[in-house]
Structures are given as structure tokens and as C-alpha cells.
Image 1 (tube, helix red, strand yellow):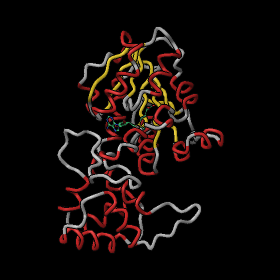
Image 2 (cartoon, helix red, strand yellow):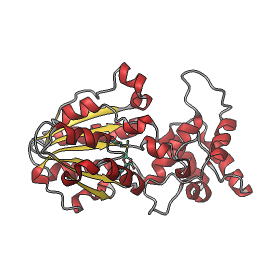
Image 3 (cartoon, protein in one colour):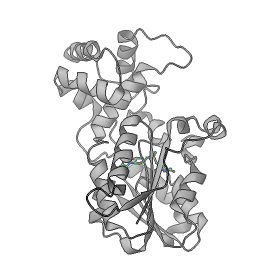
Image 4 (tube, helix red, strand yellow):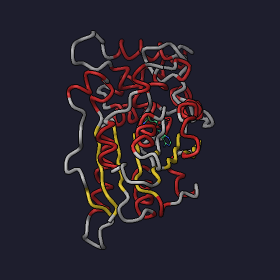
Length: 298
Ligand SMILES: C[S@@+](CC[C@H](N)C(=O)[O-])C[C@H]1O[C@@H](n2cnc3c(N)ncnc32)[C@H](O)[C@@H]1O
């Protein structure tokens, strides 16, 4: 685990938009290593926290980190899309946080296969109880579906060529590790390190990870349902790390704030997404692409 593993993004802004000084229950839907969770619990010593993570290994790390607050914390090994089924006391909930994507702990664990800079299996599952790994997708998806996934979720060019090479390599049994996939992308995109250029493997890994974990699936309906279940005054804060996620958050908040066919359920608190300042980006490079949006239940 790196230092960044302990370093939540936009911590001051998260507390501010959750209005976490208020006593009550806060739901951290993406607990990770509990960086934001600790900040919330510290902000008001009488507040309680409900934390969820679909990654059992992360959850155990978070549990250790939250040991000092155990009496005020309840944790679930669950996908946040199951939140409505967990018996959450929504009448007491003051704030809901979703910090999307993967954590540095996951990225820095080679055996999880999330990072193209570490040798590991092509896994990329956040929840190890699920069956679909990145390897399974690469070995079983039709070529055309691979073309679409890399274009849509990785925003890569030339995805026909990439998909064709994947199908070629898999027939030869030479696509088994993260390094195999990284080297393939370097060949397809004729990679030369250049300032400001993103490694093509980073984009390909992002695309696969989104598909493996179905990260965009049901995100909008989850926000809608949680907003409906909550009481007026509840704050919603969502942090996303790529445009597809941010678009879903933005449109879902906007739909719930619209008064076209019924009374609005949300008031938007951030006209534009809030982003990390230079100082935070310098200290934590992961914060560079973070976009925070917040709204309040009316
Ligand atoms: C960016 S990290 C969160 C970091 C955390 N806020 C902190 O301060 O340490 C995202 C976490 O959310 C989890 N996650 C992603 N999608 C999830 C989902 N649909 N349901 C539950 N957990 C999810 C990941 O496993 C990961 O641990």
C-alpha cells in the first residue's frame, strides 16, 4: 500500500459538501481504505458511518483502520447498488458519498491484475466472488465486442487492430498476464514514452476494468433510488474519474433537480464539477482527474 492509499481525494471539499459537521449517519458507498470515512467520523464525534465496499480485501483493511471508531461504524461487503436492500435507516442519514473507481490499494496489488505496470494475472475483479475476469473477457468475447469496449470505455483509437491482435494472440495461448496485454498495446500503438501522453495500456486496462466490474451499469438508477429514499436535507456527493461516469452523475442529478414534470427532488450545489487544486494534484496525482458533484435532497 502506498502513501496515496491513505490519501483520499478532495477531502476538504467532501466534508464541506456533505456538511459533515451535522450530527447524524453518513453512508460511504465506496469505503476503499476508509480515508474519507475517517475524516467524516473525526468531523463530528457523535456521527455514525455506514460503509460499503464490494472488495472484501479492501473492506478488511478498512475495518482495521476503523477499529478505533468501531462503536460508530457498520460495514457491509456489498455492491452499493444493493443499498436499498440493506436496511439503511434513511431517516437518520445526513449524507451519502460515492467515490467511484478503484483505490491505490487495488492498483498496487499485482495479484489483482489492475495495473499494467505490475506483472500479474488478467483478473481486475473488484469483488472476487464474481466469475468474470479480464482474462475471461479477452478469451471469450467476440472480436467486434472487444472493438466496442476498448473504444467506448477506453476512448482508444484503432480498436479494430487491437481486437484483431487480441484474437490472434489468444489462439496462440500468449495472452495470459498483464504484461502480455501491456506489450501488445505498446506494439499496436507503437508506444514511445512522451510527456503528456497516456500509455495506451492504461486506457485498455481502464476499459477492461469497467467491463469486468460493470461499473457504469445501474449507476444512474442507483443514485435515483437512493435520492428517493432519503429525507430532505440529505447531501449527495459523487466523485468520478472519467467522463463516462461523470456524465451519468451529471445527468442523473440534473434529471432529479428538474421541475418539468414533478416537484424537484434535488437542488444542485455544484454548477460545475469541483476539481483538485494544484497543491493537491502535486501531492496526489490520482486527484488530477477527479470531478466532484454535489446535491441536496429537497
Ligand atoms: C476510489 S476508491 C475509494 C477510496 C475511499 N474513498 C478512501 O478514502 O479510501 C473506490 C472503492 O470503491 C469500491 N467500489 C467501486 N465500485 C463499487 C460498487 N459498485 N459497490 C461497492 N464498492 C465499490 C472499490 O472496490 C474501491 O475500494
